[in-house]
Image (cartoon, rainbow, N blue to C red; front, side, top):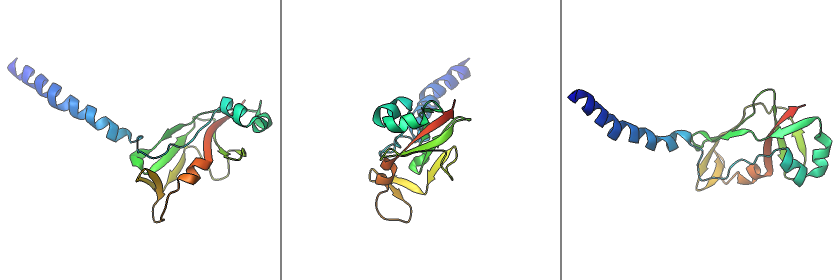
Length: 140
């Protein structure tokens, strides 16, 4: 019985707290850099009504699941059969652009000094990330 309580004590004081403290490191989504913008049908209808009218009622748009693994990539994922969609800051919307697959992975980047930077290239790529929002388009 003594061994049981000793094991329980060790598990409670050592193992559980270490797993809880590791959780933020494993998630990796709070890098300190800007987040990838995303949109849904309601936002598109409000911000770009003419663009919305071109695609409604054929498509409905939802937010993708966006992750930032190890602060070295941005992954936007849509659940099939929805496809990745991009909305440029000028209101141009492209459903399933050539070369963009689900999941859409922006790699070769890293978060440094609160800015996304491209490996091997000086300067920030934040302006490019801000200028393109992503969504999941589902054909009705």
